[in-house]
Structures are given as structure tokens and as C-alpha cells.
Amino acid sequence: MNYIERRHKSVSSRIIPVPPFDYVVFGATGDLTKRKLIPALYHRFKDGQFDQQSRIIGVSRSKLSDADFQKAARESIDQFVAKADRDEKVIDRFVSVFSYIPNDVSDPAKWADLSTKLRDDPKVVRAFYLAIAPDLFGPTCEYIEKQGYYRRDARVVIEKPLGHDLESSMAINNEVSRIFAEDQVYRIDHYLGKETVQNLLALRFANILFEPIWNSAHIDHIQLTVAESVGAGTRGYYDESGALRDMIQNHMLQLLCLVAMEPPASDDADALRDEKLKVLRSLKRITSADVGKVTVRGQYRNGSVDGQAVASYQEELPADKKGSKAETFVALKAEIENWRWAGVPFYFRTGKRMASRASEIVIQFRNIPHSMFDHAEGAPRPNRMIIRIQPDEGVKLFLMIKDPGPGGMRLREAPLDLSFAATFAERTPEAYERLLLDVIRGSQTLFMRRDELEAAWSWIDPIRDAWDQATDSPQAYAAGTWGPSGAVALIERDGRTWHEDDN
Ligand code: BG6
Image (cartoon, rainbow, N blue to C red):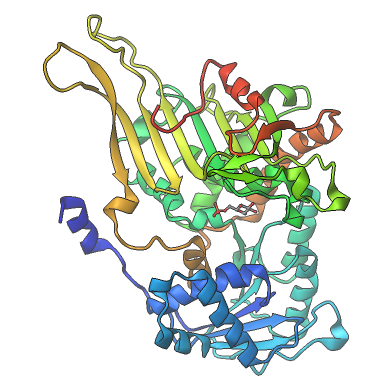
């Protein structure tokens, strides 16, 4: 066992049980519940973080019994939990906490009675997860209140799409905030639940090394990439949204905030969220005059991903959507107008059907001010840090070293390579595992506050408007590539290149 493994063994896997809860899941038969919520809760139950004193109460329109819902929970575990983690005895106990009530929140005449399922004990945490379309948030909150299920210490969980622009987002938040106060609202951005994203906080603020050089004096630029190999044409919602709203408005702006914010005084939810908000509010507005210069949108044509031929976005779309101008790729250059970051571009890139699934943040440092290695082979290259979010989570810091052995002074770049997967053998928990139980703990640190969400929309809306008014279409790129040529031109105009693995 090496040093890191020994240290790790002594600090890892601390399971801190949460208080008993009643989790009411609206939209209990939907995709989110099946794919994400049930598997995540199962893992937390299996690890002993909660037990049979807690209840998971499913609500949706389908006429199911408790037994049907328990069966559905089993199926979801079968489908979405790795075989090695499935334990029949644990599954039996886990599904015993599930019960179900059919209900149509949109019709008050048919409102069902939840009171038999909910416990009045103040020690039992009460949480409502709205895994439903946002137009049902209002009626659901009203149902909760009018039926008397609201408590001042109850929590409500919502998640995107939280609007398609600032105005619609405010309307959604207004509906929810008629009943629930801001300190009861948990807005999920599942990227904040990812281990590697939280690691950004540790990297920046639990080490002395980086903070002194984390600024425009030492950093040339930063790249944020979230590339996916999956397609999007068969997902109804995506065509309305496009990559700008689907990925940049939320996940990628959250990543930007964690990379660029000032050190918060504590990990208190508002201390952290105040700093994130300042970043969002300092983003330079992209006007319609600039949009052509600093943004690129693309849509994939057919091509090949992982050796498999795949159809174009247009071919995947249903007949009534053909001709859609939805972007499946976005590259853009953002700037933060504050003292720390003035003059440092942040290049964003995200897309579907790209060459591979790869999410990473590249911190490109400036070159050394003077090189003493006039006679050396190989000029010093500026340092670079790659924070790899997924897959192959880890951090690589590229340093210049002397090539070992005789042959004179020869310089070359080599990485300090910390692979989380290789170093820490344990399963990396899914984002929802952390987030679902943070709700029960009452910790809002990893959830978006309303003003953050609105600041993000305020920055996104002018870009979207300019695109909507433009007569051109998204640039074509072949599936299985890194996007349209315009994305390469965007960064090359500034004398820079996108980071590719091993260059
Ligand atoms: C979702 C988007 O929020 O995040 C999807 O709607 C995207 O389009 C997904 O595929 C990416 O999440 P992850 O965790 O797979 O990186």
C-alpha cells in the first residue's frame, strides 16, 4: 500500500447516517426517478446511511399499488445498479420503505390524501421531490399547502429545465416561492454533486500552491469542455432547448463559478453561493454585435462514433421537427470583468456526438518570464493543469523536466498525474447520492440559489436572442469529431488551440 492509499484508508468512506425522513417523490413513475433517484437512494441505504425508519412515498397519475411501486423500484435497481452492488437481502429491506399514492395534482377535485403516509413527528424530515414538468410545480405546491402537508422545515427539490429564459425562470420560481421560502428550496444542478466537481473546491482552497497564482498575472486562459458521444435527436425536450440552455446555462456556468470565484470564507451555503453569484454578475455581456465573433453553434451530421455509424441529428428527429435549427454544439469565449480575471478568456465547448465522452477543465498558465535554457533542446512550455471531471477522473499538472540521462540539457514536458480512479479503488458515488441526502441534512451548499439561476439566464438570454434573429444556421460537423471548424477558428484567432489529450 503506498502513501496515498494509506492516508486515504484512514479518512475515506465515513458514513454519517441522516435523520429519518419522509421523501415524497412526485413523478414517481418517470425517467428521472427510475434512472437516477431510486438507484442513488439504494446505494445510500446499502451503505447504511438511512434505514427502514425512513419512507419513500411515490406519487404520480398512474394507478399503482404499493406493491407495484416496490416492483418498479426493484426493476430500476436491476437495470441501473451494477450487478456487483446488488444484494437481494438489502433490496428486500430497501423496497419495504416504498409506498405509493395515485394522484393528479392538476385537478383539485381528485386530490389524493397523503396524510396517512406522512408522519407528524418533527424529528422526521419532510422532503418533496418534484420530478415533474415545471408547469406542474405551481399546482403541486398548492396541493401541498392546501392539503396541510406544508411545514416550515419541509424541503422542496426542483431541477431543470427551470425555464427557457429569465422571464420563464422567474415565473417558475415565483410559483414555488409562494409556498416555500428560499431556505427550503433545493435547486439541483447535478454537476455540483459530482465528486470531481467538489474536488475543485478542495484543490483550490485546501492547498496553498494554487491560490497565489490563480489570476490573470499567471494564467493565460482557461478551457471548459463537456463533450458527449451520445446523440440528442430522439429526446423531445432537447430540440426546444439546444446545447446553450441544456449545458451552458447550468452545468458549465456552475463549473466556471467554482473555477473563478473568490475564496469563500466558509463552506456555509450562502458564503459559497455569494461568491458564485459575483462571478455570474461579472460576466461580460455578449451583445448581438459580438455574437458572431465569440460564439459558434453547430449541429451534427452523420458520422461514426466509436467505430459505429450514426445518423445525423436531422435524421433522428421526428417528422414534425425536421429542419430544426437547434444547436447540438456550442463553443464560446467568455470574459469575467473583475480584477482577478481581466484579460483572461474562458473558452467553453460542449456538444453531442463528439469524438468521445470527455469533460475537463484546462488551466493554461503563462510562460516563464525569461528562459535561461538558451542552449537546451526543447524550449520551456507553459505549465498546464488538466482537471478531468469524467471519465478517468483525476488531475494532471504538466511540468517541464530535464529529460533523464546523458545527452546534454534536454527539456521536456511531463505530467504529475493523480488519477482518482487508479488511486482510490472505491466506487465513485453518483451525483444524486450526495445531493438527495444533502436535502435531508439541510445543506444547501451544493444547490443553486434563485439569484444565481437568474444571473445565469441574464447572461444567456442575449446570446440566444442574437442567434434566434440570425439568418444563418448552426454549422455542420460530422458526428464523431470535435465540432465544426468554426470552433477551432474561434480559439485560433486568439493564437491558442483546444487542448487535446497528450499534446
Ligand atoms: C443533463 C443534460 O442535464 O446532463 C443532458 O440534459 C446531458 O443533455 C447530461 O447529457 C450530462 O450529464 P452527465 O452527468 O452524463 O455528464
